Amino acid sequence: MQKDGLCLGGSMINNIYERPEVLSSLKKVFKEQGSVQMEVFLEPKIYDEVVKGIKKAYMKKVNVPLEGLYFQAPFQKKEITKAIDGWISALMEKPVKSEQTIFSFRHKDYTICSDEHDEKKGLMAFLEVTKVWGENWGGYTSFIKNNEEVFRIVPVANTLTLVSVGEKMKKFVKYVNYHAGKTKREYIKFFYEI
Image (cartoon, rainbow, N blue to C red):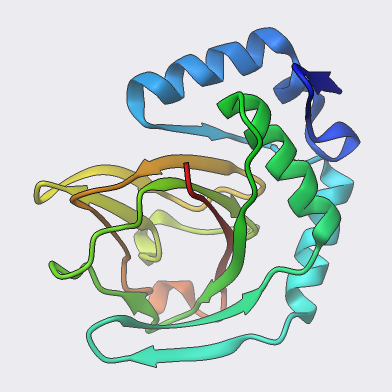
């Protein structure tokens, strides 16, 4: 589907999110609140492909004192990146390209909210790959501004969350506690400089 010369996601993205009236509503909510979430964002078959691809990705352990402990890998599904970038372009009404990274958190993993690090100005999109997650397991992503939580991403399978980030905005992933067992929280972060 094309809108003003911008390509939407086509058959990869749930077609409800490509309807002009839905896109317009999402744009309004995002502009007012600085965040918006879309459940069942990818078509189920495409979502399953993403999950399989992440299971095969080589995850590199990141263990940096005063930053966190987690695993990451580059996201290399170009056709899915192109579809999501196209959809975000339509939402933002201008062409955008993303940087993509897969993140994986398991029991004892976390990131730290540092006073010395503000998020780079732009748009973050989180595509949740985790199939099942309990909120009491930790592992959610919190966004902090002026020492107050302004938004929280609790993992819900196949949900795309958009968050506008910038000056004085910080984020962290809450410590994953023992309730998670062997379950991992995995998501793909797309970053757009806007």
